Image 1 (spheres, rainbow, N blue to C red):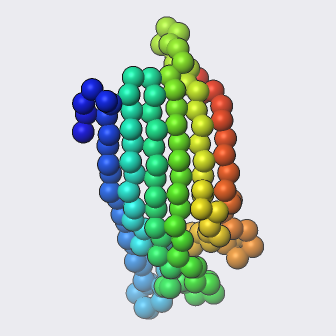
Image 2 (cartoon, rainbow, N blue to C red):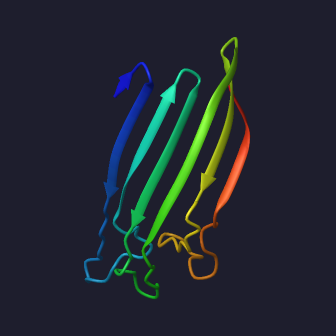
Length: 130
């Protein structure tokens, strides 16, 4: 939707993969069912986004693999277009990842039982694209 107040974009997404070997055992390190939505708003040189992802528990872990619990991942971001130099763009950005500070065990990771995904984090910076 776009009007004089800016542009809003709402996106829904999801994916599911299930794998088995011909002998009937589960393929290891498969991602679970994931779904969610992203809301993006932009006006002039500003843009923001909020992305919410729900991942279900992976209960079809492969042989010698452990199941992983479900989680909800919330990421936030904003950016401001500072300047354009010839064909380069400079952007000021801020982002927050895993804002709910979930304990995320990625089913596709070899290290899921030893090292979870990072907890809540934030960053700010300047991005130059050329």
